[in-house]
Image (cartoon, rainbow, N blue to C red; front, top):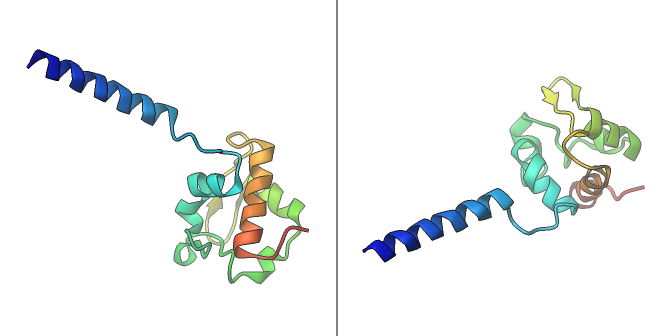
Length: 113
């Protein structure tokens, strides 16, 4: 019985260590960044969760903006008609910001310029 409690304690520690360390995925990939930080507002389909956030699929005007304009929106955030886009420059590296825009363009909009 005592051995079972020790094994259970070890399994809990291993589980918590796995949660704390997170998955061993490449967080620099645009898809990983999108899934981790963007999908909750913009949706898995990129359509903005029924108007909750920007629609990358149907809003051709938004997706026709230059990469620099969109990168600045990701970096600095903004307040718009739909709500507020948070600032990501203190959370994501420049490489992650560029890779997530590339992923958004390739997956939901026109290809990167």
